[in-house]
Amino acid sequence: MASILLGCIADDFTGATDLANNLVRAGMRTAQTIGVPQAALDADVQAVVVALKSRTIAPADAVAQSLQALRWLQAQGARQIYFKYCSTFDSTAEGNIGPVTEALMDALGTDFTIATPAFPDNKRSVFKGYLFVGDTLLNESGMQNHPLTPMTDANLVRVMQAQTRRPVGLIDYSVVARDAAAVQQRMAELRTQGVGVAVVDAVTNDDLLRLGPALKDLPLVTAGSGVAIGLPQNFGIRPSSQASALPAATGRQAIVSGSCSLATNRQVAAFKATGRPALAIDPIQLASGEDVVATALAWAEQRLADGPVLVYSTAEAGSVKTVQSQLGVAEAGAMVERAIAAIARGLVERGVRQLVVAGGETSGACVQALEITQMQIGPQIDPGVPWCHAHTPVGPVHITLKSGNFGTDDFFTKAFGAL
Ligand code: ADP
Image (cartoon, rainbow, N blue to C red; front, side):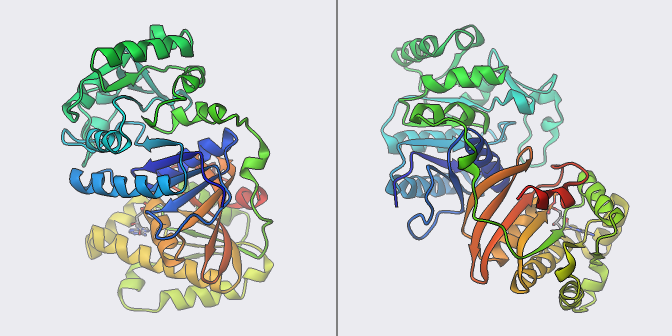
């Protein structure tokens, strides 16, 4: 297996896909792994994104997992390491962005890296070190009320300094607006001042493309998914449809949905409106011990030969609340996830080879039930949602994992057309 160029460590699953998708669009053949693989890479790719679930765990655990990912990526030949975090810089005063960044710097023997969640196309810009979400500062964006990682300060130099031993500096817009050489000169200046981590301004995607070449020789880059659009050029890679090529799609088509977001509710309604078969899963029935999974699979089996079918627990807020008050929030969630995942597995056992999954947590459960450990990233269906190709013990599948609010209303029908 050829060695990889770029090795990425993402602190959550959907963030990993977002990064992988950007790399593919910039021309890099990319695979995503779920956790740190036990074995060597089994795909002919130029970049790998290792998806961890380390955003809100104890800093020491996040560090340990990230270092394990680093060692695996180094064993696959990675020439540069990319630590990917959330575009809203989700972290607490203890971490985990700072501690993981410093642990990776120590392990890589480097005294300098950058940090920026900027991705202007996705409405995340950084100016004078302050992070804007759309038109508002981070701490006025709603993120100040996040249950796990409340972001009450938009100044990323301060936020990063609070969780980092090394001095934190800024490469501000007046530098980034010039060219890569100016950025490199500023990096050299900061380095001589003893700065270990520099927050970087970017307010347009062109800024990120200009930043890319300046990062060529850094062993470690830390960022949201945006910086990735400027890195493949450093390896002589240009955008190309080859990067997203997947094996030809075959087999039956199905959708499973456990997301209750507004967008997913609209997508379920749009699919039903086409007259295609759709079956609702009732959590109360599930809780009463009925074999809802077997019933759903028997229902699907009769219809799969005629085109895509949808099995969903998607419901509107009111009915979700009723279910949660009867069963408990966590219990209802876990029970429905298990059922949808078992249905996904059963569908693949029944010949489904093109599977759409809606819901972030639901996707995690389905990927686990299908025993998927690596996915090759293919063409994008909607921003941030690509088709992927993966091996399961039952056979290879094309799978797409759509987190709640992504995708247009006709996503469930148009997805199959994108393969
Ligand atoms: P999203 O990406 O939209 O947040 P997730 O799959 O991450 O979707 O989360 C949805 C959660 O809601 C899951 O835990 C799922 O099991 C649960 N759920 C799905 N349908 C229902 C329902 N009808 N009632 C209660 N909980 C549900």
